[in-house]
Amino acid sequence: MTTQLFFHNGAYYRFVDRCRAAGISVPIVPGIMPVLSLKQIQRFTSMCGTSLPPTLIRRLEAAGDAAEILEAVGIDWALGQIRDLLGQGAPGYHLYILNRAKSALALAAGLAA
Image (cartoon, rainbow, N blue to C red; front, side, top):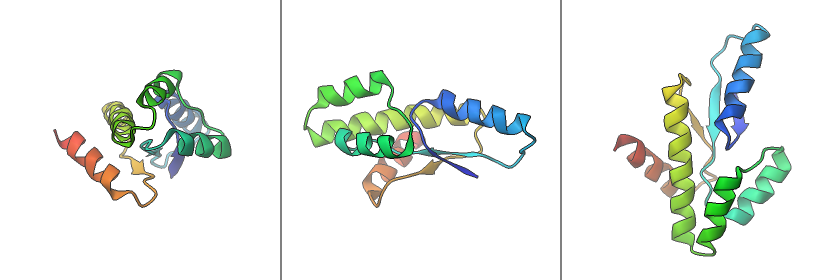
């Protein structure tokens, strides 16, 4: 099973705990979407009911319209999420990249470092 995107890892951990308590034992793969545009991610989160952490919003707002800085902030946030998730025993991760392979490659390079 793969989750929808989220930006607070605590949401994933609580979901897994509730599933396990309900007797669901299949692997639950966290769904991660690197933020590449504040406007786009605000639209996505409003549609799926997830939220952006205030710290992430502040970092994205500080980047303004600088696409390279926005992408770097989004990749950095996703790397932090993935490292924490894997460190806490997540069975892997699924990337929602919307045909933006550059971000997936940047994440792979960051995780390999």
